[in-house]
Length: 84
Image (tube, rainbow, N blue to C red; front, side, top):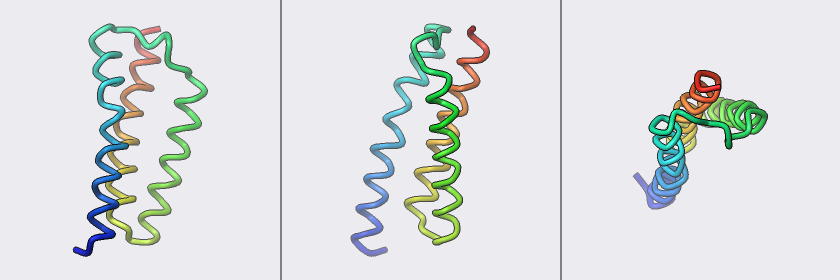
């Protein structure tokens, strides 16, 4: 693995796991009232497209970051719907 892939994986890890505190806070408080539904929809769609892009390039950092980010944000979206 070359340094540019390592750089990409570190960046992907930091940006992806930045969503973990929001997901945990939403789960613990049982409230997602301050999270915009429209933002979640557009963001999830964008992340899905980034995932497809990463797969088409066979770029591991893009694939991993967007797969995990999509997973976390789909959970937040589910909480948003569940805790109305």
